[in-house]
Figure 1: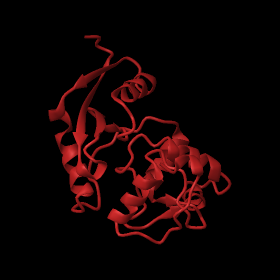
Figure 2: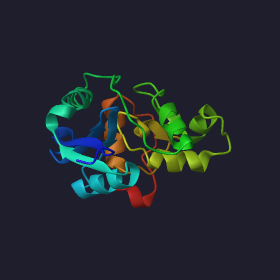
Figure 3: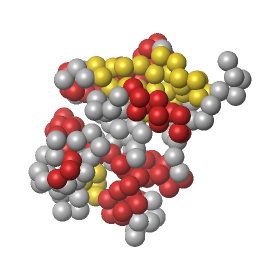
Figure 4: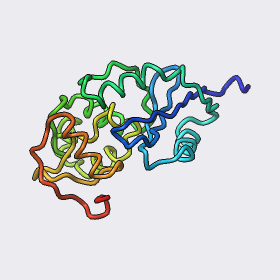
Length: 186
């Protein structure tokens, strides 16, 4: 093994919330670094790891992801409102600031893109916030689903608007307009 290689452990997790389609989770020794949506393949995970963690050694090892999967399952079953997991964010400093802001949105609440822009001291960076939100590598744990349009419309979501709606409903939030970008209406 290359001594400079970062070990990235991965495992597939199935849950009825996603009709038992696999979510692929990946973590380094520092923490959770990626969750793929069921619509994304293991190749999507490999590609992301190759791009974001140069010289990574991708190792399938469920035992390394047990705690991450346990907390995710508890959330999907309505028993967990806050995650207490180490995370290993891989992105630009702006992206990381947006992702950290997302973690401050309380369970069952939403914020607009402009709210997040204000949280990261970039009130004019609404579009950049949207782009960073869409690039979130750890959805659910970093709750990008809690960001909706300023007019309370559901907006584009990498996991699909039905998933966004289901996650918000799981958290007891339904004060939104069921409309969004046409390309995300799966």
